[in-house]
Length: 319
Ligand code: F6P
Image (tube, rainbow, N blue to C red; front, top):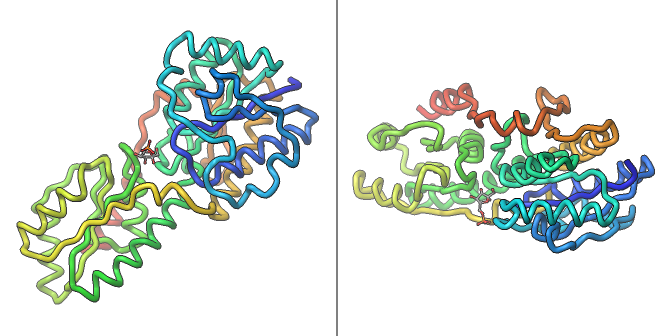
Protein backbone atom coordinates (compact mmCIF):
# COMPACT_ATOMS: atom_id res chain seq x y z
CA UNK A 1 0.00 0.00 0.00
CA UNK A 2 1.47 3.33 -1.06
CA UNK A 3 -1.38 5.79 -0.61
CA UNK A 4 -4.10 6.07 2.01
CA UNK A 5 -6.91 8.52 2.79
CA UNK A 6 -8.36 9.84 6.03
CA UNK A 7 -11.69 11.49 6.79
CA UNK A 8 -13.74 12.60 9.79
CA UNK A 9 -17.49 12.22 9.78
CA UNK A 10 -20.60 12.80 11.93
CA UNK A 11 -20.58 14.87 15.12
CA UNK A 12 -17.05 16.14 15.73
CA UNK A 13 -15.26 15.32 18.97
CA UNK A 14 -12.21 16.78 20.73
CA UNK A 15 -9.20 14.67 19.81
CA UNK A 16 -10.18 14.07 16.19
CA UNK A 17 -7.35 16.39 15.15
CA UNK A 18 -4.87 14.40 17.21
CA UNK A 19 -6.11 11.24 15.46
CA UNK A 20 -5.72 12.83 12.00
CA UNK A 21 -2.21 13.92 12.96
CA UNK A 22 -1.31 10.40 14.08
CA UNK A 23 -2.63 8.86 10.85
CA UNK A 24 -0.73 11.35 8.68
CA UNK A 25 2.55 11.18 10.60
CA UNK A 26 2.53 7.40 11.05
CA UNK A 27 1.86 6.89 7.34
CA UNK A 28 4.60 9.31 6.28
CA UNK A 29 6.96 7.61 8.75
CA UNK A 30 6.37 4.42 6.74
CA UNK A 31 6.78 6.23 3.36
CA UNK A 32 3.08 6.12 2.62
CA UNK A 33 1.37 9.11 1.04
CA UNK A 34 -1.73 10.45 2.79
CA UNK A 35 -4.71 12.25 1.31
CA UNK A 36 -7.19 14.19 3.43
CA UNK A 37 -10.85 13.93 2.45
CA UNK A 38 -12.65 17.12 3.47
CA UNK A 39 -16.26 17.30 4.79
CA UNK A 40 -16.59 13.59 5.51
CA UNK A 41 -18.56 11.37 3.14
CA UNK A 42 -19.98 14.46 1.39
CA UNK A 43 -16.46 15.44 0.37
CA UNK A 44 -15.69 11.85 -0.58
CA UNK A 45 -18.58 11.91 -3.06
CA UNK A 46 -17.68 15.42 -4.28
CA UNK A 47 -13.99 14.62 -4.68
CA UNK A 48 -12.74 17.08 -2.04
CA UNK A 49 -9.47 15.18 -1.70
CA UNK A 50 -6.07 16.78 -1.15
CA UNK A 51 -2.59 15.49 -0.41
CA UNK A 52 -1.35 16.05 3.14
CA UNK A 53 2.21 16.61 4.28
CA UNK A 54 3.94 16.44 7.67
CA UNK A 55 3.28 20.17 8.08
CA UNK A 56 -0.44 19.84 7.23
CA UNK A 57 -1.01 18.50 10.73
CA UNK A 58 1.36 20.77 12.62
CA UNK A 59 -0.12 22.72 15.52
CA UNK A 60 -3.43 20.85 15.66
CA UNK A 61 -2.91 18.25 18.42
CA UNK A 62 -4.34 20.62 21.05
CA UNK A 63 -7.26 21.92 19.02
CA UNK A 64 -10.89 20.78 19.29
CA UNK A 65 -13.04 20.15 16.21
CA UNK A 66 -11.60 18.64 13.04
CA UNK A 67 -9.33 20.34 10.53
CA UNK A 68 -10.82 18.08 7.83
CA UNK A 69 -14.34 19.36 8.66
CA UNK A 70 -17.25 17.00 9.08
CA UNK A 71 -20.75 16.36 7.81
CA UNK A 72 -23.71 14.10 8.23
CA UNK A 73 -24.35 12.69 4.77
CA UNK A 74 -27.63 10.80 4.14
CA UNK A 75 -26.72 10.49 0.41
CA UNK A 76 -23.88 8.15 1.34
CA UNK A 77 -26.51 5.59 2.38
CA UNK A 78 -27.24 5.00 -1.32
CA UNK A 79 -25.19 2.50 -3.32
CA UNK A 80 -24.62 5.17 -6.01
CA UNK A 81 -23.12 7.50 -3.39
CA UNK A 82 -20.85 4.76 -2.04
CA UNK A 83 -19.64 3.73 -5.51
CA UNK A 84 -18.98 7.36 -6.39
CA UNK A 85 -16.83 7.56 -3.23
CA UNK A 86 -14.85 4.44 -4.16
CA UNK A 87 -14.37 5.78 -7.70
CA UNK A 88 -12.98 9.08 -6.34
CA UNK A 89 -10.59 7.26 -4.00
CA UNK A 90 -9.31 5.07 -6.83
CA UNK A 91 -8.95 8.09 -9.12
CA UNK A 92 -6.38 9.47 -6.66
CA UNK A 93 -4.64 6.10 -6.40
CA UNK A 94 -5.79 5.71 -2.77
CA UNK A 95 -5.76 2.07 -1.68
CA UNK A 96 -7.03 2.23 1.90
CA UNK A 97 -9.10 4.59 4.04
CA UNK A 98 -9.24 5.55 7.71
CA UNK A 99 -12.64 6.80 8.91
CA UNK A 100 -12.79 8.67 12.22
CA UNK A 101 -16.30 9.02 13.62
CA UNK A 102 -19.26 7.52 15.43
CA UNK A 103 -21.66 4.71 14.61
CA UNK A 104 -23.17 6.43 11.53
CA UNK A 105 -19.64 6.90 10.16
CA UNK A 106 -18.89 3.25 10.92
CA UNK A 107 -21.88 2.20 8.84
CA UNK A 108 -20.44 4.17 5.93
CA UNK A 109 -17.09 2.46 6.47
CA UNK A 110 -18.84 -0.93 6.53
CA UNK A 111 -20.40 -0.16 3.13
CA UNK A 112 -17.00 0.74 1.67
CA UNK A 113 -15.52 -2.54 2.88
CA UNK A 114 -18.57 -4.26 1.36
CA UNK A 115 -17.54 -2.75 -2.00
CA UNK A 116 -14.06 -4.24 -1.50
CA UNK A 117 -12.35 -1.04 -0.36
CA UNK A 118 -10.08 -1.56 2.69
CA UNK A 119 -11.34 0.70 5.47
CA UNK A 120 -10.43 1.01 9.14
CA UNK A 121 -12.67 2.73 11.70
CA UNK A 122 -11.42 4.89 14.58
CA UNK A 123 -14.05 5.62 17.25
CA UNK A 124 -14.43 9.41 17.50
CA UNK A 125 -17.52 10.64 19.32
CA UNK A 126 -18.26 12.25 22.67
CA UNK A 127 -21.06 9.72 23.24
CA UNK A 128 -18.80 6.74 24.13
CA UNK A 129 -21.29 4.46 22.42
CA UNK A 130 -19.13 2.54 19.93
CA UNK A 131 -18.99 -1.20 20.61
CA UNK A 132 -15.54 -2.78 20.74
CA UNK A 133 -13.81 -0.04 22.70
CA UNK A 134 -13.90 0.98 26.36
CA UNK A 135 -13.56 4.64 25.37
CA UNK A 136 -14.12 6.77 22.29
CA UNK A 137 -12.02 9.80 21.37
CA UNK A 138 -13.64 12.93 22.81
CA UNK A 139 -15.56 11.32 25.67
CA UNK A 140 -13.04 12.30 28.33
CA UNK A 141 -12.91 15.92 27.16
CA UNK A 142 -16.71 16.17 27.00
CA UNK A 143 -16.93 14.70 30.47
CA UNK A 144 -14.53 17.30 31.82
CA UNK A 145 -16.51 20.07 30.14
CA UNK A 146 -19.69 18.76 31.73
CA UNK A 147 -18.26 18.50 35.22
CA UNK A 148 -16.81 22.00 35.04
CA UNK A 149 -20.27 23.28 34.08
CA UNK A 150 -21.98 21.31 36.85
CA UNK A 151 -19.45 22.53 39.43
CA UNK A 152 -20.40 26.10 38.48
CA UNK A 153 -24.09 25.34 38.58
CA UNK A 154 -23.62 23.77 42.01
CA UNK A 155 -22.28 27.09 43.35
CA UNK A 156 -25.39 28.99 42.35
CA UNK A 157 -27.68 26.06 43.27
CA UNK A 158 -26.23 26.22 46.79
CA UNK A 159 -26.59 30.02 47.07
CA UNK A 160 -30.23 29.96 45.97
CA UNK A 161 -31.17 26.62 47.52
CA UNK A 162 -32.56 25.33 44.26
CA UNK A 163 -32.88 22.02 42.50
CA UNK A 164 -31.11 21.86 39.14
CA UNK A 165 -31.83 19.49 36.30
CA UNK A 166 -28.93 19.30 33.84
CA UNK A 167 -29.49 17.74 30.45
CA UNK A 168 -26.39 16.33 28.78
CA UNK A 169 -25.74 14.87 25.33
CA UNK A 170 -25.09 11.23 24.42
CA UNK A 171 -27.79 10.49 21.86
CA UNK A 172 -29.12 7.05 22.89
CA UNK A 173 -26.29 6.36 25.33
CA UNK A 174 -26.09 7.35 28.99
CA UNK A 175 -22.32 7.33 29.48
CA UNK A 176 -21.84 11.11 29.61
CA UNK A 177 -24.68 11.40 32.14
CA UNK A 178 -23.55 8.45 34.24
CA UNK A 179 -19.88 9.41 34.45
CA UNK A 180 -20.51 13.13 34.98
CA UNK A 181 -23.26 12.43 37.49
CA UNK A 182 -20.95 10.15 39.44
CA UNK A 183 -18.06 12.64 39.21
CA UNK A 184 -20.30 15.43 40.42
CA UNK A 185 -22.22 13.65 43.15
CA UNK A 186 -25.60 14.08 41.49
CA UNK A 187 -28.65 12.99 43.55
CA UNK A 188 -30.17 11.21 40.57
CA UNK A 189 -28.81 10.22 37.17
CA UNK A 190 -31.29 9.37 34.44
CA UNK A 191 -29.96 7.32 31.52
CA UNK A 192 -31.76 5.66 28.61
CA UNK A 193 -30.35 2.21 29.44
CA UNK A 194 -32.17 2.11 32.80
CA UNK A 195 -35.84 2.65 33.59
CA UNK A 196 -36.53 5.28 36.17
CA UNK A 197 -39.47 6.05 38.42
CA UNK A 198 -40.29 9.67 39.09
CA UNK A 199 -41.41 8.56 42.57
CA UNK A 200 -37.81 7.42 43.32
CA UNK A 201 -36.37 10.77 42.26
CA UNK A 202 -38.90 12.61 44.39
CA UNK A 203 -38.27 10.32 47.38
CA UNK A 204 -34.52 10.99 47.13
CA UNK A 205 -35.13 14.73 46.98
CA UNK A 206 -37.43 14.54 49.99
CA UNK A 207 -34.95 12.47 52.00
CA UNK A 208 -32.25 15.04 51.29
CA UNK A 209 -34.56 17.94 52.11
CA UNK A 210 -35.65 16.32 55.40
CA UNK A 211 -32.05 16.08 56.56
CA UNK A 212 -31.43 19.74 55.76
CA UNK A 213 -30.13 19.61 52.18
CA UNK A 214 -31.40 22.65 50.33
CA UNK A 215 -30.01 22.16 46.82
CA UNK A 216 -29.87 19.22 44.45
CA UNK A 217 -28.35 18.22 41.14
CA UNK A 218 -30.10 15.81 38.79
CA UNK A 219 -28.34 14.79 35.58
CA UNK A 220 -30.50 13.68 32.65
CA UNK A 221 -29.17 12.08 29.47
CA UNK A 222 -30.85 13.52 26.38
CA UNK A 223 -31.82 9.98 25.35
CA UNK A 224 -34.21 9.82 28.33
CA UNK A 225 -36.26 12.81 27.18
CA UNK A 226 -36.51 16.50 27.82
CA UNK A 227 -34.75 17.87 30.90
CA UNK A 228 -37.19 20.79 30.78
CA UNK A 229 -40.18 18.45 31.15
CA UNK A 230 -38.52 16.53 33.97
CA UNK A 231 -37.73 19.83 35.72
CA UNK A 232 -41.39 20.90 35.45
CA UNK A 233 -42.58 17.61 36.92
CA UNK A 234 -40.23 17.96 39.87
CA UNK A 235 -41.18 21.58 40.52
CA UNK A 236 -44.87 20.73 40.49
CA UNK A 237 -44.59 17.60 42.60
CA UNK A 238 -42.22 18.97 45.25
CA UNK A 239 -42.96 22.67 45.19
CA UNK A 240 -39.18 23.22 45.08
CA UNK A 241 -37.65 26.02 43.06
CA UNK A 242 -36.22 24.17 40.07
CA UNK A 243 -34.08 25.33 37.14
CA UNK A 244 -33.03 23.45 34.03
CA UNK A 245 -29.78 23.77 32.07
CA UNK A 246 -29.40 22.10 28.70
CA UNK A 247 -25.65 22.01 28.13
CA UNK A 248 -25.88 21.40 24.36
CA UNK A 249 -23.01 21.73 21.90
CA UNK A 250 -20.59 23.27 24.38
CA UNK A 251 -19.93 19.59 25.21
CA UNK A 252 -18.49 18.97 21.74
CA UNK A 253 -15.84 21.70 21.74
CA UNK A 254 -12.65 22.60 23.52
CA UNK A 255 -9.05 21.53 23.65
CA UNK A 256 -8.80 17.74 24.09
CA UNK A 257 -7.61 16.38 27.42
CA UNK A 258 -4.29 14.54 27.63
CA UNK A 259 -6.25 11.26 27.82
CA UNK A 260 -8.03 11.98 24.53
CA UNK A 261 -4.85 13.15 22.78
CA UNK A 262 -2.95 10.04 23.79
CA UNK A 263 -5.85 7.73 22.92
CA UNK A 264 -6.23 9.42 19.52
CA UNK A 265 -2.51 9.10 18.82
CA UNK A 266 -2.45 5.41 19.73
CA UNK A 267 -5.57 4.56 17.73
CA UNK A 268 -4.52 6.63 14.70
CA UNK A 269 -1.14 4.91 14.50
CA UNK A 270 -2.69 1.45 14.90
CA UNK A 271 -5.20 2.12 12.12
CA UNK A 272 -2.34 2.81 9.71
CA UNK A 273 -0.49 -0.33 10.83
CA UNK A 274 -3.60 -2.39 10.14
CA UNK A 275 -3.84 -1.07 6.58
CA UNK A 276 -0.17 -1.88 6.08
CA UNK A 277 -0.79 -5.39 7.40
CA UNK A 278 -3.47 -5.83 4.72
CA UNK A 279 -6.54 -5.53 6.97
CA UNK A 280 -9.75 -4.81 5.06
CA UNK A 281 -12.51 -4.13 7.54
CA UNK A 282 -11.37 -3.54 11.11
CA UNK A 283 -12.14 -1.08 13.86
CA UNK A 284 -9.60 -0.08 16.47
CA UNK A 285 -10.32 0.44 20.14
CA UNK A 286 -8.93 0.32 23.63
CA UNK A 287 -9.69 -2.41 26.15
CA UNK A 288 -7.99 -2.63 29.56
CA UNK A 289 -5.54 0.02 28.30
CA UNK A 290 -4.43 -2.18 25.40
CA UNK A 291 -5.04 -1.16 21.79
CA UNK A 292 -7.19 -3.79 20.11
CA UNK A 293 -8.90 -4.27 16.77
CA UNK A 294 -11.91 -6.24 15.65
CA UNK A 295 -14.06 -6.89 12.63
CA UNK A 296 -16.14 -3.77 11.94
CA UNK A 297 -19.18 -5.88 10.96
CA UNK A 298 -18.99 -7.80 14.25
CA UNK A 299 -18.52 -4.57 16.22
CA UNK A 300 -21.63 -3.04 14.67
CA UNK A 301 -23.70 -6.06 15.72
CA UNK A 302 -22.69 -5.70 19.37
CA UNK A 303 -25.09 -3.69 21.55
CA UNK A 304 -23.70 -0.77 23.50
CA UNK A 305 -23.87 -1.64 27.19
CA UNK A 306 -23.67 0.67 30.11
CA UNK A 307 -21.42 -0.43 32.98
CA UNK A 308 -23.82 -1.88 35.55
CA UNK A 309 -21.27 -1.60 38.35
CA UNK A 310 -21.07 2.14 37.71
CA UNK A 311 -24.86 2.41 37.74
CA UNK A 312 -24.99 0.62 41.09
CA UNK A 313 -22.12 2.69 42.51
CA UNK A 314 -23.83 5.95 41.53
CA UNK A 315 -26.98 4.73 43.32
CA UNK A 316 -25.13 3.71 46.45
CA UNK A 317 -23.19 6.97 46.73
CA UNK A 318 -26.19 9.22 46.29
CA UNK A 319 -28.38 7.87 49.11
O1 F6P B 1 -23.08 12.14 18.46
C1 F6P B 1 -22.63 13.31 19.05
C2 F6P B 1 -23.79 14.22 19.36
O2 F6P B 1 -23.26 15.40 19.95
C3 F6P B 1 -24.87 13.61 20.24
O3 F6P B 1 -24.52 13.59 21.60
C4 F6P B 1 -26.04 14.52 19.93
O4 F6P B 1 -27.27 13.86 20.14
C5 F6P B 1 -25.84 14.81 18.46
O5 F6P B 1 -24.46 14.58 18.18
C6 F6P B 1 -26.20 16.21 18.05
O6 F6P B 1 -26.05 16.29 16.67
P1 F6P B 1 -26.04 17.65 15.84
O7 F6P B 1 -24.74 18.33 16.11
O8 F6P B 1 -26.17 17.20 14.43
O9 F6P B 1 -27.18 18.45 16.34
